[in-house]
Length: 328
Image 1 (cartoon, rainbow, N blue to C red):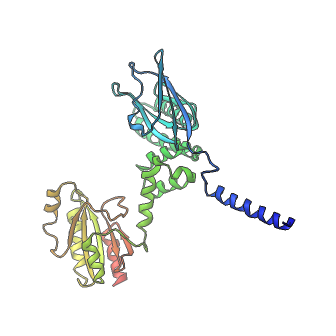
Image 2: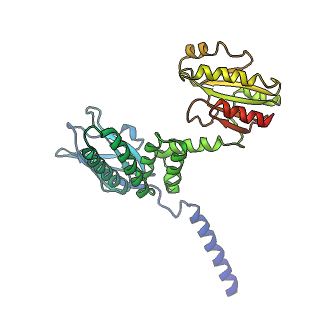
Image 3: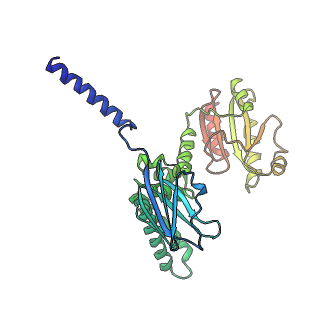
């Protein structure tokens, strides 16, 4: 075989190796990692591991202390506690030795970060002036949490904290936290609620096709009609006034071109049925369906084309009126 041909084959082999490596081929990457958790037993009890979804855990005890040795496939978040004692500590399972003392863990990147954040939060609490605690703490905690998320964007603690902080934030800010995380952290199970919230918002933008629809709505679209899907709840203080405005608005359009589907988010069937007594009988009335769409607040309406694509999303009847007037 010529020298040139040997070199060519070597280049091909190295190229294949590089591709497999870039795709995360199992033959080149270690699967899983070992971890150890050590701490003092609480009331003579070792932590309850039944909810960890891990097998082959080795648990040893001696002189009032425990030692748990195991293997995990990926970093995960667990709650460390006992059945007998009201004691619980959020713990991040990572490679290495994790030491737990008085509900706080150290020894790995994510656990060290959480313990540092807890200490900083304690200092914030003690620094709040009397009578101004709520406002000062809320403002200080938000800034503190964002700083720790940024500093830990590449480890599980940053993702876990981002998900928790995002629960009280509007979608634009929540999306900013999510997109600031490293790609691997975004895929973590602990970040799933935030990841799914962002995905729902992506699916709910103008131009997107809605693939999960009730059969009644699907039938209207197949009949070449536009459909307003209106999400609402009877407990909204302005709901009755808003419903009256919606009736007045939709009466201006040909029923053969525009249909209305109202979906209530009420938990109570009785309250829902009572609230729709005065609605036009031709409206479709459903309860508890989300259609896979973002419902960040109530009420909110989505206008769909006959092809099932979002033409407009409106938080008020005035916004819906504008969209309909531009369309018809």
